[in-house]
Length: 412
Ligand SMILES: Nc1ncnc2c1ncn2[C@@H]1O[C@H](COP(=O)(O)OP(=O)(O)OP(=O)(O)O)[C@@H](O)[C@H]1O
Ligand SMILES: [Mg+2]
Image (tube, rainbow, N blue to C red; front, top):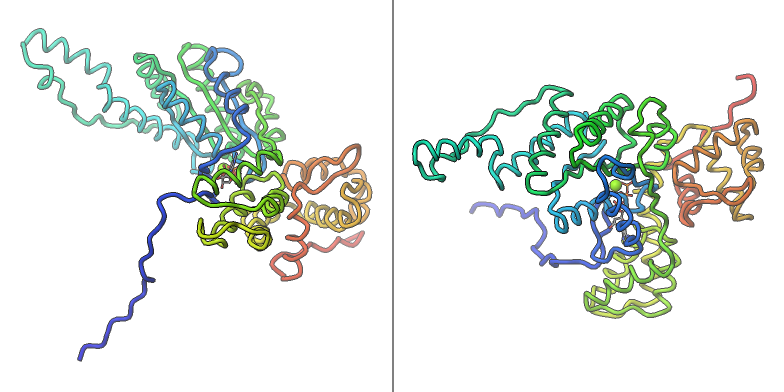
């Protein structure tokens, strides 16, 4: 008898076509709240004079506040409302010049498939007149060899793409997510191409980047690139309590579920204005209540909030923590300790507790603000940017998943 082969896959289950929440980075939620004004402002600028101020923009926000989702919304609106060509690149994809060039070539191929090659279409019409062939025969496409030389070819191909788009009355929107990750030299180079095409050649090319706020201290502080200096900055703020409440309630109801008022208030407070946390809390409550099967109660909301805090720490705070310097880590853990007794500790007190000289206080303050883990707390004071940061840090230290570097002894 042949032995039975073991089965490794779990039993198949139906995956619902749509879920009310999307707790994943870069996933557009079914209910996007609190961003209409910002999206309209950016779209209005992109629709202005491409050679003027405002045609090049950057969205700034800490991790998980919805930058990628905002970029995607603007891209979709540009395609569907205006028929623009969108070229989208991420600063973490590798060499930004080569990646942008690849995407420009891809967009050109798509455009050619839809409209025909502009230069070859002219040739085809000449041969139709001379030989009396039908357009279908004379306009046969051969694949064009792609140019991939670094640098100048990007400028030429991007310029060609904008003129092809212009022949159908469209613009090219170039978007760059994770822009803070681009090395300065390449950011300058890309910027000079965009400026050349938009301002010198006066072609309809517009730009929207997205970055972590510390880019104001790095790329945007560059004195050599007028492109980087002149980017119009838009900040995506935390959601208001009213928007967070709607972002939780509406998708539950449109998916046939219900949530108690008390549970909704508890969940809204746990979200703390953070869009990623909203998706985590919403998703966990929805699953705890078995979807639309039962109404979501305070018990579901409490469990979901506790679970979501843990996930938020692992996915959001831990990567940021690992990117901090040793002194930044000491500074942050001192701020967490002092926050237990005062919501907005004084910077001087934080430095003292962290064993850091007061002379560098403003540098630490600025760097921690830029990390997105800390917010301003009034004159000379700071506060933690999210209520889940302190419990996460304490637990991560207690479980040994992170450690705070010891204060160096003076003279060592
Ligand atoms: N306005 C919003 N309303 C509801 N949910 C949102 C909103 N904006 C973003 N989200 C949700 O928040 C999460 C994070 O969004 P997104 O990936 O766009 O953030 P991000 O700022 O790009 O993060 P990162 O800096 O890590 O790339 C996603 O799950 C997304 O569905
Ligand atoms: Mg993102």
